[in-house]
Image (cartoon, rainbow, N blue to C red; front, side):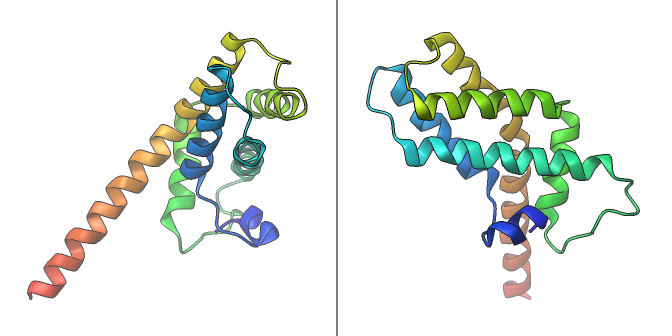
Length: 145
């Protein structure tokens, strides 16, 4: 979908990555077992967001245009949420710390990481849900004609 996705050889779904990371953080917050594979999804999400933020710094006419509207929507929602790369890098560092040592941060910090991930990805989720409903409606109209 983006250069990040081409390098990673996978499609990036930031909403799914955030869900997995929030689930791992919730388990950690409740004193449960750390799920490193789910927590690493949060690190992937941060890498994706950092890549999008770097792309946003380039002028619009030089940015590649993708066939997938979701990438453009991710960029727009990231701009609207007014997240900067410093914030994302801080969260990435905290997630890396938690991956190395689950007791490295207090429950309040874990809660703040969860809130950050949800705040950043909620507009992305809303756009993707609306786009999916739009496609369903279009298919229904085409089938009925």
